[in-house]
Length: 327
Ligand code: UD1
Picture (cartoon, rainbow, N blue to C red):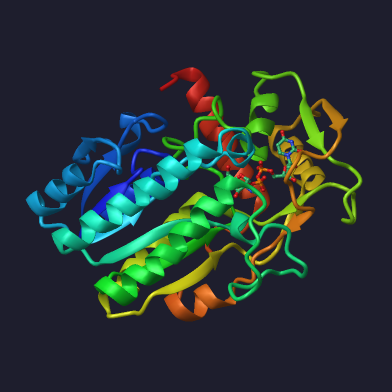
C-alpha cells in the first residue's frame, strides 16, 4: 500500500514505519521533527511539516498517490496538558481535523488513528472495554476523544473509514537495539527507570503507594512497541479488505505495578535502584488494564512480545546504545 505516516519519526510511528517498509509498503513520513528524529526512519521519504497545514498534506497525498493515513502526530504528555490545554487542543484536535479534511479531499479515505486509554479516565471496572464509559480526566485524553468522535462523523459524511486504536502503555524498544524512545524528554515510568538504571538520574520517584492495588502502587498494561506497531499493519489490512470504522484497545489484558516494573528492571540490570516514595501524581488512575479480546477478533492480532522482563531488556539495550552515541 501507499501510506502517509504522520508523526512517523516519533517513537511508535518510527517502529510502525520500519515494519511497513519491511513488508514492502511505500511510506511517506510527515513529521514536524519537533519531537521526532530523522535518524529513526533511515532513508524513508520525509516531509517536514505540521498536520495543521492542510494544503501541504493534500499536496503530499496527491503527489505520491497515497491511499491511507496513519496518524500518530500529537502531543502526549497528560500532565503537561493540564497546564497547557490550548496547546493540546490546537495541535491534537485542530491538526487532526485539517489532516482528515485534506485526506478526504485528496482521496485517501482509509485512516488509522492513535488514540489512548486516557479516554476512559479512571474506569469503574477492569479490564476496561471499548464500550465502557468515556470520561477523560485531562485535556490530552479529551483531545483524543474529540478526534475519535470527529472520525465517526467523517465516516458517515465523507466515507472516511477508520480504525481507532486506544493504546495502553507503549514500552520497550526495537529488538536490534537501534530504535526507541528518547528517555531524555519523557516522564513515563519505563524510560524514567532506565535513566536511573544507567545513572542519568539518581532515583525513581514512586508516585503513590496508597492505591487500592495489591502493593499500593499504580498498575498499567505495558505493551511492547513492536506488538503495538504491528497492530497498525493489521488495521490497514482490515481497512483494505473493506472493514468498517471500529475502535480497538491495544494492550495485553494484564498489568504490572510500579514496584513490579522496578523489580524487573533491577533483575535485568543486575543492580538495586534507589527509590523515593512520593504522593500520587494528579490525574493518575489506580489501575488501567485493557479488555483485549476485540482486537484479536476484529484484526486477528496476537501479541508476540508479552513479557515484562523482555520489554525491559529491549529498553535497557536501547538506553545503553543511546548513551554510547546520542541522537
Ligand atoms: C500517561 C497517559 C497516557 C499517555 C501516556 C504517554 C493517563 C491516564 N495516561 O500514561 O494516556 O498515552 O502517559 O505519555 O493520562 N510513575 C511513577 N514514577 C514516575 C513515572 C510514573 O511512579 O517517575 C507511575 C505512574 O504514577 C503510573 C505508572 O508509573 O502509575 C505509569 O506511568 P506513565 O508511564 O507515566 O504512564 P501513564 O500515566 O499510565
